[in-house]
Image 1 (spheres, rainbow, N blue to C red):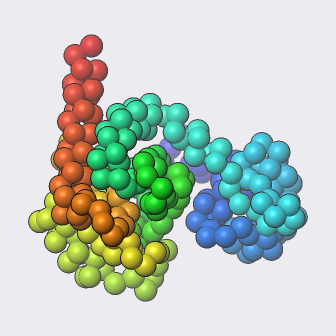
Image 2 (cartoon, rainbow, N blue to C red):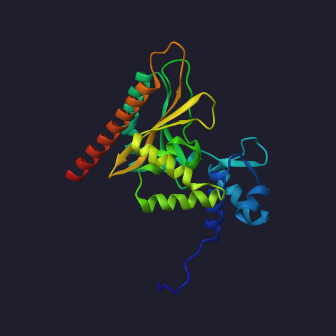
Image 3 (cartoon, rainbow, N blue to C red):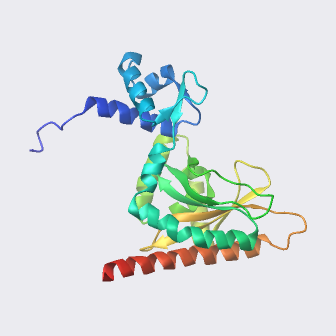
Length: 259
């Protein structure tokens, strides 16, 4: 096909993907009217598509009525990809040990366009702790994990991410984020007060492969009375755990090439 030839189009597939991408960005379930407006198509155009996506378990109506949201099915499909599956299998044993040592929860985060998404978690061994659900998403610009992922990317990737972030948040101010990621690179870790829960400090460290952060391990740290585990010690153990995951991934990659 020459450069001048039109691209092949699949209108029904386009409609379905537009709906899924819209729902992935939504912070709450959407009505048919909101979906219609969001994808720029009439209700008649999307009604049958919504039915098919619901029958295939890609979307559902949590309230049993007219608002739609994504199910975990797409997430589960993504988790079966060999690189993601290998990452989770490598990280989880180390994260379990970290959680036992610090008596706090931790979770594993990867980038997803202009957002971060939690792909694995370990609950705290004790009775108190903040747990972030698997599949949780937040804008890169509003999370410690996102700042860590930004801090350890090549210039081209960072520029592309900033472009996506500003497209979805036109009011976003870039200089404060750039200052923050410079400080994070110097410290080797992000320590940022949670923007969601008062009294929680998100501590996040990069898992590195080929000189860039492919994911981050994050602890929503809660300072508890009577606990001997300080934030400084927690941070040290987190960095060690992230480095261990990086080393294990490098080892697996090398072993795979040798075979």
